[in-house]
Every structure is written in C-alpha cells, then in structure tokens.
Image (cartoon, rainbow, N blue to C red):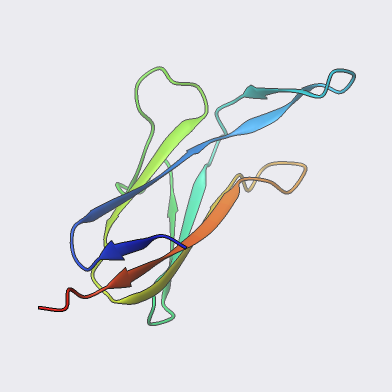
Length: 105
C-alpha cells in the first residue's frame, strides 16, 4: 500500500475499457455516461462524485475513457476509492487504497 504525507492534493486516474472483440479478447476505451468515483475517508465517511456534475471529477480533453478525481488528503489513515460505471452491464471500473501519515516533526 502506498503511503503519502498528510495534506496536499491527491489525484486518482482511470481509463474505462470494455470488451470490443470477444474472439481476440481485445478491449477499447470508452466514455461512460455517468462515470462515478466513490471515496471512503479514514473516518468512515463516504462521498460519491459523478461526472459532469461534480467538480472533483474531470475528463481531460480528447482522451477517450480517461477521468481524474482530485481531492485533499486531510486525514491520516487508510483511504479507499473506487471508480464505477453505474450504467455498465458488467461489473468493472477500478479500486484501490492508500495510507496517509502525518509527518513526524
């Protein structure tokens, strides 16, 4: 698990992909209608951010399927996150966790 220092901006990236050819098992990037980022802070509070209504989630330029979620690391402890496409016919997206620690001095 990666460890970061308390404070500062944190960005979690994702590229949404879907099966484009079952025979070759090829995947292609796509833009979901409502890409959603879920963040659980160390205190247990959960926030859900959906593009384009939430300013925390952005879609950079012309990169198909790429989305960014940006927030402040303002609590020490374990942070958990998940990207979802709520309209997808199959479960997918990405998830992960990281730890934030206060500096010792």
